[in-house]
Image (cartoon, rainbow, N blue to C red):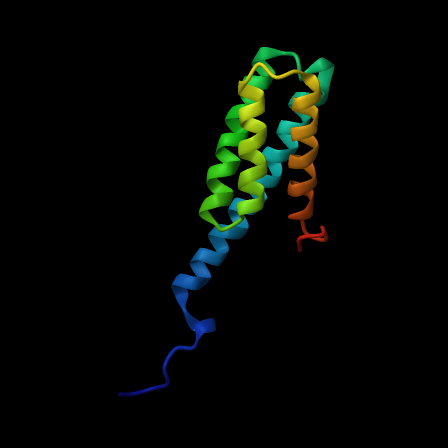
Length: 114
């Protein structure tokens, strides 16, 4: 055997996965901002097109976050998606949105989850 065995910090696959996770995190931040904008603008909570777009984004966020091990964000996005797709009223949407925003915010650089 020649050379020294690769340490955990020398694994190119780990580096690639970490890079993909950071990239997914940035995309999820942008998606999270878009969800908040859709539901905040001009009574967006009641607008069926905005609710539908926000639900699709939440579905994407839930899948991406789950893939990269962020179960809390995946759960919050999934919960908001389900409320948006249901007949629940504004209060339920706003409560799920607040949980989602708090969870997403904690994942930002400098946030509580950093």
